[in-house]
Image 1 (cartoon, rainbow, N blue to C red):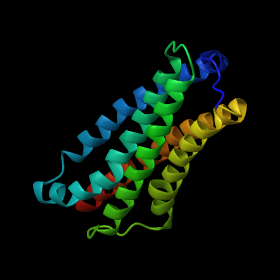
Image 2: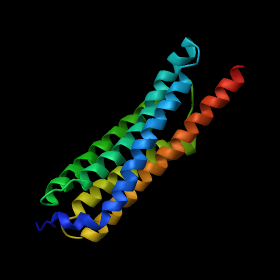
Image 3: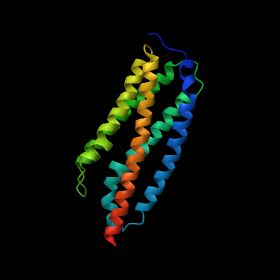
Image 4: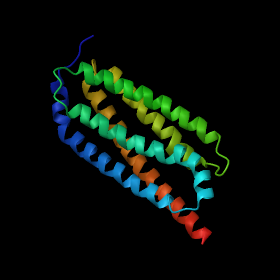
Amino acid sequence: MPHESYAVFAPWSNFYIITGSSAAALTGLMFVVVTLATGMPLRQRDEMNVGFAVFNTPTVLHFCTAFLVSGILSAPWRTALFPDIIIGIIGFIGVLYVLRVIFRTTKLTSYQPDLEDWAWFGIFPIVAYAAMVAASILLPWHAETALFTLAAAIMLLIFMGIRNAWDIVMYLAIEQAQKR
C-alpha cells in the first residue's frame, strides 16, 4: 500500500488556511443564532430543544469538521498516512452522526421537515462525509483525485453550514414575528 509523503498536501495549504479560517468564523456566528433563540418563551424553547439537536448542532458540527480537517492538513506531518487515517475516521463518524440526525428528525413533532430540509440536513451531509471516507481510501493510489474529492467535501460542509444557518435564522425570525 503505497502512501504519499506529506508533500502531497503542500499545494493545498492556502486552501486549508482559507477553509479553516472561514469555518472557525462561521462557527462563532452560530452562537449568535443560538442567542436569538434564547429570547423565546420557556415553553417554546423546550419544544425547540429537539429542533436544535436536529438542525443547529449538526450545522455547528459541519463547520467544526471543516475547521478540524483544515487544521489536520495544515500540520507538518512526516507522512500522509496519519492524516489520511484520521480523515477517514472523521468521515466515517460523520456518516454515523448524520444517520443519527436523520433518525432524530423523524421523531420531530412540532415541525415536519420538507424535501429541502431532508436534502440539506440529511442527504448532502452524508454525501460530504462519505466523500471524506472515499478520499481517505483513494489517497494512497490516486492522490490528486483524493485531494480534490476532499476539498469538495470540505466546501460542501461549509456551504451547507452557511445555507443551514441562514435557514435557521429565517425560521426563528419568522416564528418570532408571528408570535408578536
